[in-house]
Length: 317
Picture 1 (cartoon, one colour):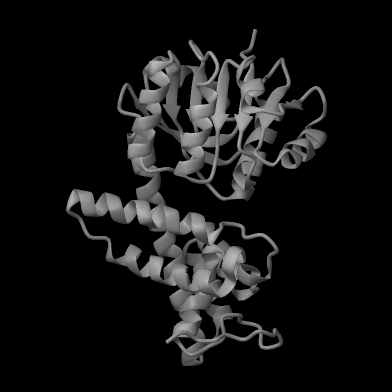
Picture 2 (cartoon, one colour):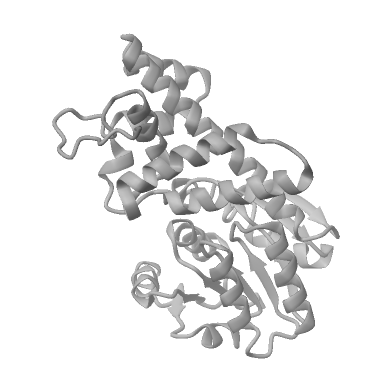
């Protein structure tokens, strides 16, 4: 008999992960869904069908019948609060799998809290954009006891993911450490594209041929971000694809890790500066790709790259 699964946190990534768990995870019971805003859980459950998913109104109601509980929330505070509530009921023998991107120290705190209650714990942040989550093409980074990794592996490659990197019998903190260092390189990639497109416009080359070259040279994420910038997707969305606050959270964690390690990540310092500019301009609609708008402002251009749009940039000095 397959274990009962529960999933907590239904943001852009979580929804795609749940869809693939239901469609390809060989579950024999409905996936239990919980989200702080219940409507999001209700909406997802409606698309998965009554045999595929059911909604729990509280964390406790989701945890009690579950054998394996996935968590995918936005930041360290939400992660701690979720685990604190999970451990308000009996979790002895249950497996908690944390897919959130948090500081390694937070992961160690969660492991200690759960171990004291008899629960197994795997840290499993994932790499990939929401479209990759929908397509089951994530990369799972897994750290924890080997037997616990074996319990969650059936739901990774071939279900939610296309690949896995494992740290069996190593500290769970290794997984978020790899995730954050990897994310810092993604942030720098977005910065590089933003600078290149801005320079192309200012120098008279124009963005289209640079975008074409980016796609030929680095197919995949690079042209996807370039396209979002050129088309103005970074400011036209009602809801950001990757919220600037979450990007700044990751950048802040990387800067702290570097400082504690005696290393320097100057490029991440620049990234955080441009993310803050995007936040100041766009507020809650600020997107990671909004770094393009920030770089444009520093070059004396409008934050928005469409001359027909209103609300032109108040370029920051």
